[in-house]
Amino acid sequence: MEDIIIALYSIIPFVIMMSYLPQIISLFKATTEEVRGISLSSWFIWVSTGFITLLYATFIMHDARFIFVSAVGFGCCAIITMLILIKRRRCKIPVVLAETTEHIAQ
Image (cartoon, rainbow, N blue to C red):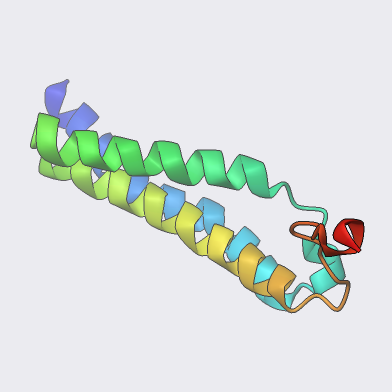
């Protein structure tokens, strides 16, 4: 039974990559406007939790399979998040990050 579980766990990175691949391809093809509807906060949470899981796998568990699975999941989430950020940066709609108070002083 243990061998079956190990074998199944060993294919998880490939399942992860195949599940994220359609989203990655879709983001490459997407226009800036199409990307604006994707929740960036969700992807930041998934990247953050993936990174913490990778740290845990590496420094606490010391399990090569767990490290590899965690790295693949984190990597896929990071790629998608970066693609969203890159596409949004190309947006022609101006984004106000902070208002200045210069006009108030005058």
